[in-house]
Structure formats: structure tokens, C-alpha cells
Length: 103
Image (cartoon, rainbow, N blue to C red):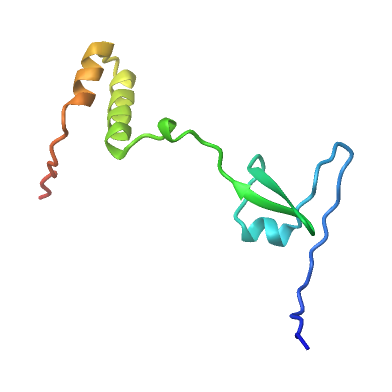
């Protein structure tokens, strides 16, 4: 005879516009936030609901690109601007790994 493990099910509610309320404990455990996306997968015994991140890998900056963007933002706040050709040239050049010397 197979033993069954006791699971405690959390119950949510389907709202007026098919909105599903995720119980707080599960929501917090999954580190979800309002506005996050969820994926639905139909299974033989129900529906699997998984948190998911929608994002284009091409939209994610590398650390080097992120540093250039921050540098450009600082320059713009100071009233300094570069042309698009200058920006492309700088992005194509490999960055040196200089460290600042501290006293």
C-alpha cells in the first residue's frame, strides 16, 4: 500500500475578470511582486502556474555596456554630449581594466 504524504493546499479565488488571487504565503515564497507575469500549463489533473520573466536577452546590457550608459548619463547631467558615431566607436573598443589607486 502506497503511503500518501500530507500536503496542505492553499486556496485562492477567481475574480470577476478571471483574475486569480495567489495566497500570500506562496506569493511571498516565490518572491513575486505586483505586475509579475505567470505562465500557465494545462496538465491532466489541473493547471500548473509558474512565475516567469518576460524579457528579450538582446535588451539586457552587459556590465561593460551598463558602465558606458552610466558614464553617458553622468556626462549628460553635466551638459556634455557625444555623437552617435563617437558612442559606437567607444563601444567597439575593448575597455581596459584599470583600478583606481587609493591612498
